[in-house]
Every structure is written in C-alpha cells, then in structure tokens.
Image (cartoon, rainbow, N blue to C red; front, side, top):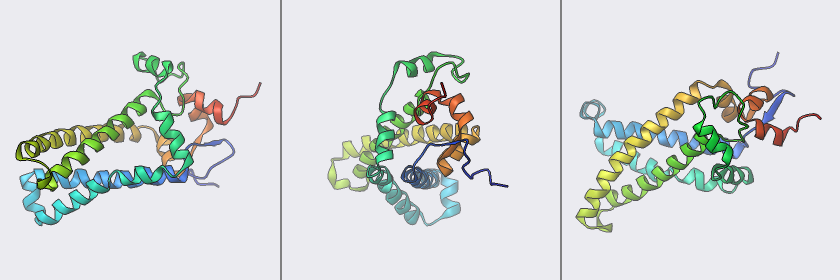
Amino acid sequence: MSRPDTPTSRDLHRFARAERIVHRTTAVLMTVCIATAAILYNGQLAVWFGHRRIIELIHVYAGFALPLPMLLGAASVAYRADLRRLNRFTPADWRWLRSRTRRDGTIRVAKFNAGQKINAALSAGAILVLLGTGLLMYFPDLARLTWRTGATFVHDWFALALGLLVLGHVFFALSDHEARRGMRTGWVSSAWARREHAAWADEVEPPLV
C-alpha cells in the first residue's frame, strides 16, 4: 500500500525541487521574522523571553536573508518559468477575481490563480520595502534622522500588513490538502489539477481526443 505522498500514475508534477526548497526556506525565515518581531514589539513577550539584543539580531539577520532564497532560486529553470507565470495577468484572471463562483471550475485557471498571483506580488513588494527600511533602521549613518523615523513607521505598518497576508495564505493552504501536498512533494492528483487549474492540467497532460 503506497503512502498518500507517493506519486502515482494519476498524479501530475507541479513543483520542482528547487521551487519547494525556496518556498520552505522563505517560510522558515518569514516565521522567524514574524515571531521575533512579535517579541520585540510586545512588552510582556519581551520580558518573558528576555535577551532582547539576541532576539533583535536574529530578527535582523533573518530579515536580511529573506530575499536570498528567491534570488538563488533564479538558477532553476522551473523557478524562472513560474516567476513569469506569476507576473502575467490574463483576461481569465480578471474574470476569476470578479466571479462569485470562481472555484466551481467554469473558469479555466492556469498554474496559478489570480489570488496566488496577487499574493506573490504583494509579498515580494512588502519584502523589498521591509528590507530597505530595515537597512535604514539598522545602519543609522545611511540617512538623516527624519528618514530613519519615516523608515520605522513604514517598516512597522508593512510588517503588520505582511503578517496578515501570511496568515491569510496559511488559512487558505490549510483548507486545501492537495495544494499543500503539491508544495511538499511536488505532485498533485490529476483530478484536483483539472478542477482547480484546468488550463495548466491540459498543458502537462493533454486530454484524450
């Protein structure tokens, strides 16, 4: 009897190994950033954990490292191909966003739906803003005081927005076992692919005619 994660003849390959490593590494670094930020900004947590300077350094280094997995992932052909997919909005994506029955399969979705594309764009943009403002905060000699004050304000609010975005991403992921399996093992069932991403399923497994 095969394990649920073992690919079968009815499965389709969705994510390459490099893509899964980038996702996992980014998830770990993001979790560290969010957890350490919560400790630094919550007085009770800060007192309970102590070692504020160590927590601050962990937060800073995890934040500086956050873009690295995505940059290194560009060495993968599959990763670059999916970046191009995420960066392209199609008429079907706009229909998907406007539809109240977007998950019933009537709109043929490609490898990524419009929600996933928006999530990826917002996450990447927020990471860049947090990296830039974090640099200004950590290296005070880079800019004058007014810039550093503005950077702190922007950093805090973007961090909150990104944290909420991550929570939303996790919420939707927890409700879709097959999507999690795809990111964990690289494989998804053909039935799920044809229901959720029919246009992509036809690319990798053309229907019989």
